[in-house]
Image 1 (cartoon, rainbow, N blue to C red):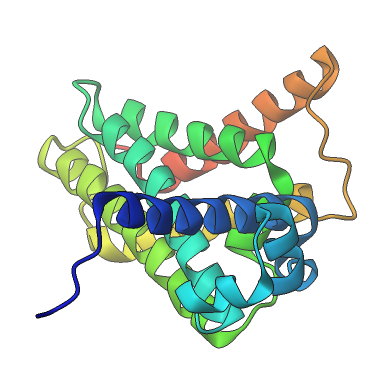
Image 2: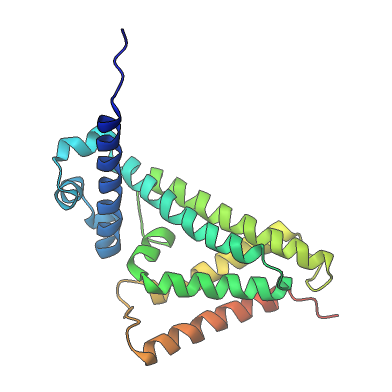
Amino acid sequence: MAYRQTPAVEARLQDNRTRILQAARALVSEGGWQEAQIANVASTAGIATGTVYRYFPSKAELFAEVLSRVSQREVDVLNDIAQSDASAQERLHSMVTTFVRRAMRNARLAYALIAEPCEKAIDEERLKYRAAISEVVRAVIASGQQQRSMRSDVRADIAATVIVGGFMEGLIGPLSPLASSSTDSDEQRAEVAALADQIAALACASIRNAT
């Protein structure tokens, strides 16, 4: 007779997995991929190091899962904006400003998601993240082209790739661990708002139909 896990056992296993992922995310937010070691994850989660490996055979697999979960949330936020009733230009502007502001709220984590050197498995997940965001942007651009508010002399997918690459590149300096990333004061919040608006304005200008 095959062994069947009881509901209590299944709940405990799921709880352990959740605690591991939450601990790993917290450590990446504090020190990036390089500082988040399995032993630290286990300690933060309150479990044995060996238990972590039962769920994730390697550090790369664990942090690829962390990146996948965090990035999917960001894609979902942008997709909600993309589905709104605003014009294509307004949606694109809102998507970029929202992305920038959310990134600056947790700069260390965002830097890890966008630019920090990492293992191949994590980088492959990061490429999927970029591709998913580019697809959301592409759909908005295609909508704008149909409405003739966005230039039609460039392919929507190419424009989306350039725009996403541009606003992510524009964030590398501000997100860098060497930069001051606090957003606690009114002055710092105003600086983030200005940064977000300027990056979004450039993104929108690059695809706006001038005729």
